[in-house]
Amino acid sequence: MVVETSRFKDAEKIIKNVLASGKGTILPDEALGIIESSGISTPDYVMAKTAKEAVEASRTIGFPVVLKIASSDVLHKSDVGGVVVGVESEEEVEKHYDEIMDNLAKDVPNACITGILVQKQVRQATEVIIGGIRDEQFGPAVMFGLGGVFVELFKDVAFRIAPVTETEALEMMKEIKGYPILSGNRVI
Image (tube, rainbow, N blue to C red):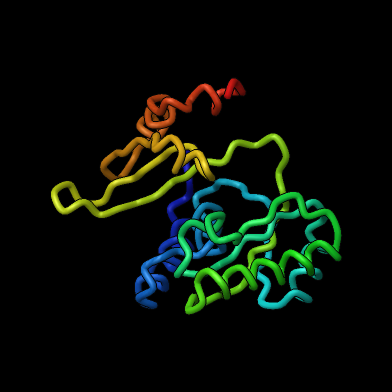
């Protein structure tokens, strides 16, 4: 896949804003913006700051939706009740929005909350994680693995020194133990 260099300017702008903010964490909508700027399609999403905005977003996006907390203080959203999948109605959106906010107030009371990401739920998809680090010895590196709860459960990721070519990215996918899941084998 060849991506126009000009498209990366959007990703560069997002990353520069994150670095300038000093928060050190990319929020879900920012991550999706970076992904989209590299030519990868994502399910429709809206960042909602109120339950009313979340309901309006879900109405526009269409059900079912997923609700995900957006906070630079919360890296593992599901650990603090910050993710709800399979939300099927406006009433459920409002209820779960409030539940997520209550969970965070209880579990991470000082968290800076940007909002809740409302995203179209994709059925029959495999979640992956892609990350980046700056290694003291090797410099920028890219990480790939199965996402969601699998990343913590299996701790099965691959790393490459950046930049990564398409061939190297495919090699990373194939070298994780979870590759059979990515290739369509659902035997877990």
